[in-house]
Image (cartoon, rainbow, N blue to C red; front, side, top):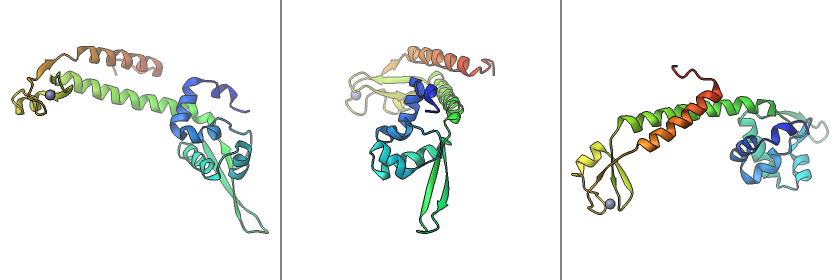
Length: 174
Ligand SMILES: [Zn+2]
């Protein structure tokens, strides 16, 4: 198998699993060396043709597979010959990490710049403005809303953000 090393990596397994789901995983986990048709894969993996096609198109959308069409001169049928491009996985994972970093930074900023109030009975959280609108009383149960300390959450996000920045070699001052 051409990408055996990559596929032993649990991070990559998880990434592929999230992309294609459990039914597509047999396809994603068994990239052939050369070109392969969807029918060949379905037969080899004992899967429904539609499940194979669905997985292949998800891989295609994520730049992890490409295809070329060949017309059979006798029957006129089109055959799709697929090639897997798992060499693009590291780059895809890095883009995912950048997206996660952006989202975490935005979320951390939101947590830091807002004050929150909590109904301890319903476990519903309100921003300061909302809490004020409700007269600091829970609109669901009427309990008083308590000021909420989210510094633990912010700290946990900060740690994760630092880890990601380090992994991605992002300048902390940047
Ligand atoms: Zn409540």
